[in-house]
Length: 234
Ligand SMILES: Nc1ncnc2c1ncn2[C@@H]1O[C@H](COP(=O)(O)OP(=O)(O)O)[C@@H](O)[C@H]1O
Ligand SMILES: [Mg+2]
Image (tube, rainbow, N blue to C red; front, side, top):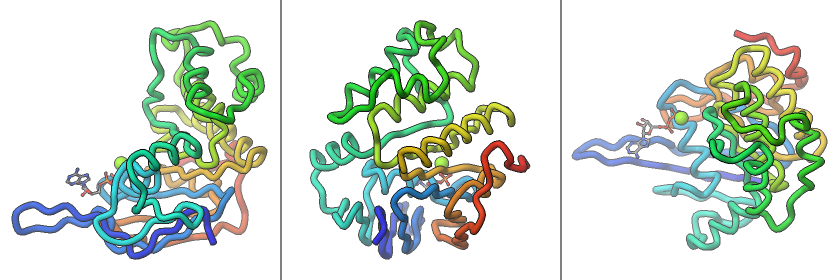
């Protein structure tokens, strides 16, 4: 039994006489502690998938489970607690608060959690020890993404959702950020669900899901996991 399960999941938008299935009858199981890479062209349903699993959006039909609990039956308050206690998020655009320092940005994550990790540990883990008093504008893109990762991780989340985490980064910096995620996954067994356009990233996933038109068209379980540093960048 996986940490997540989707059964015959549909997300359908209606306009006049047309139905558009953002998710078109998806069955899926995600195992705790794995890195799942979701690939697919724009409009294939990747963000919808993340939003359903993270309880931000709702299915039109079907079931979604988190650790055997039906997310689709939870009330808004239960969903808020579910997110607060279990989830971290990382986005392409970092979403840092510009008038707070690195340390203060990371502390925001800590305040969201009842079981946070120590600030010192996380700051060291992401390699920002010498930058804690800087503001986001004084950082490079890679450093800003490290702050976002630290802010998500200090919560000590069971699951980390990443929507295009390296979308704004060059190859070298992107690989460094992915190597950091890989290290965190190995050390804390955080389940990671990473959405990306970049097929190179697939080689570091335990599972790779390829989506098209709201369907899963291929699922690959990698026998060998490639170190993020050694990814062949497309
Ligand atoms: N709020 C919405 N209203 C109508 N259609 C939507 C809405 N959100 C997403 N869609 C449609 O659902 C499909 C999947 O979108 P999305 O999950 O954002 O794809 P991706 O993240 O892979 O680019 C697209 O056809 C998109 O236009
Ligand atoms: Mg998207």
